[in-house]
Length: 29
Image 1: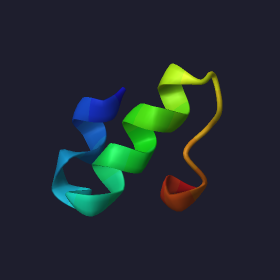
Image 2 (image 1 turned 120 degrees about the horizontal axis):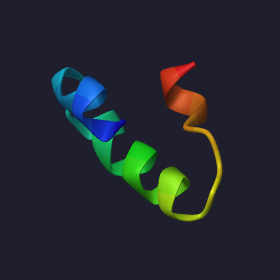
Image 3 (image 1 turned 90 degrees about the horizontal axis):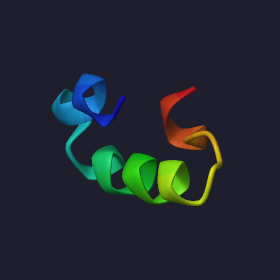
Image 4 (image 1 turned 60 degrees about the horizontal axis):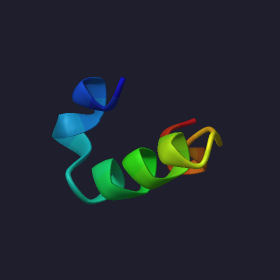
């Protein structure tokens, strides 16, 4: 799912961390 966010760059890290903890990436909503 993180691959969709590659264009976001900085938000990608947050997305990966949130996904790892089982949480949705609030910055990508």
